[in-house]
Length: 442
Image (cartoon, rainbow, N blue to C red; front, top):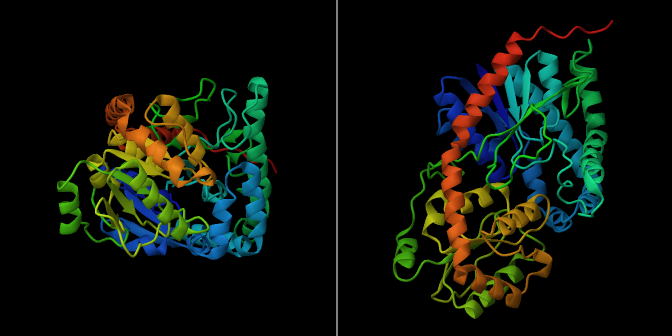
């Protein structure tokens, strides 16, 4: 098979797909990886073909407007308001993204396209090319269920009909927001109308896109009413200790010495989620660590925290460290609740405290708490030195958190997420190859 994987965003949006790409290549498939150009050295390190996609999304998130945008993402409606505030920037960004995604498909000529939900144009591109599309989200977001409402929607006791309606509302808003981009792309590249019936969730009328969820069923169980085209494979982990610039990563002697000269510290980092004032957040964390009396490794990440002029002996700051190496050496982890960071924490058997900004992060925070692997999430809007210190104390002293986290780690290891996902993709392609081509009406 010739497979095109496509994703954009921060490292957390890229690394799981890179793990899947490596697994597919190891199984003998020809794999190209379409993503932001800045990740090309990282991709080449694994012998894969990088294909560039517009990286304006990263530029936007790094800007002051992007930081304000992140602060509004604590609900679906907040996200809609935030999106409207940057619509002028987003429109040309999406136009370029659609053009680059088409160019990547032209360059690679794939049999199967596996894509992140941000690449909303991929079902239409797959339909135009007459190949299979597989949507690969890292969080449940595209397949409706009556079991629970869509994350970010109010949880009210109105039953299964309400729960299912929340997913359908989000789907309708997604289609509304992407319709114009797809229409303009079709005018240029699909004049015979092969993709006209496609949408972000359908490849042709009545035929849903196959959905392959890259997370653990032990952390978020499969809903009871999901259809057969929805799959859960387990997490996709990339174990090679490589920086995002493609270079091999090694801990500094100073980090090694810090880890060896005292009890296991707590990891604290918010990745790319900078918030409005990273300096104030860093000072708040230092006060909380001192108040709780714990040792800590602070990860600066991509602007989430900043370097402080003077640090107590109990605190060490790192710019970057692969979670697969660092987390097993931690007593517990505190982070924003990105899907990848959450996965790395539970895989390492670490008690976890999630301090979400928005999007799917509160969902993962509530899942961790529901499973008993950590305390209730502490949203960024309620983060104070006192509240964080109290949560840190509970996190490291409540023994059941670690017991349950270790049990989760064992279940996740048994899933073999990448190998399972490879088998699912192969089976989906074989099944599609046996189907007759759809007949288009005149």
